[in-house]
Image (cartoon, rainbow, N blue to C red; front, side):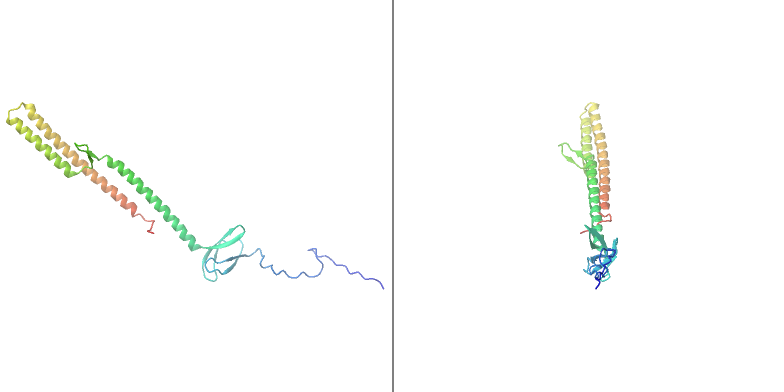
Length: 206
């Protein structure tokens, strides 16, 4: 008998002509699908590559898709919005605090310009009542001096000294009242600006 040889014809994959069994993991390794889970309900999701935003078909949550080290995961957009709002509020609070500190420093510098010093060296803020009382006392002393000098027949320059003392007292009282009025106006402007900054929108009490 003549021997019979059977040739195996290789295929393009370098295998024999027999059919290769189907790959059970083909779907799992499909590069056209990204497998993730919903960050809200945990349901599995399959998304096309390059997807940045998705909606869970199970719970309806709005998700953002992240890629990290070849792994994909989702994050709730609501959580991202909350953190973004929190950061914006913190930035606004820092900005408001900076404006407050700047305003306080400016007021301290301006406030020092209105300080008055009495005869004892004590420094205080000007007041209309104090200026008026001080001027009244000084004028009274000048009047008494002038009358006394005239009654005893003192030389004319003694009387003139009393008149000059009265004029200086009146001038000082007027200047003190004007300074007190300017201080009160500046104080009201400072307090109004501070209230405006404190009531500015953009932050909320937490």
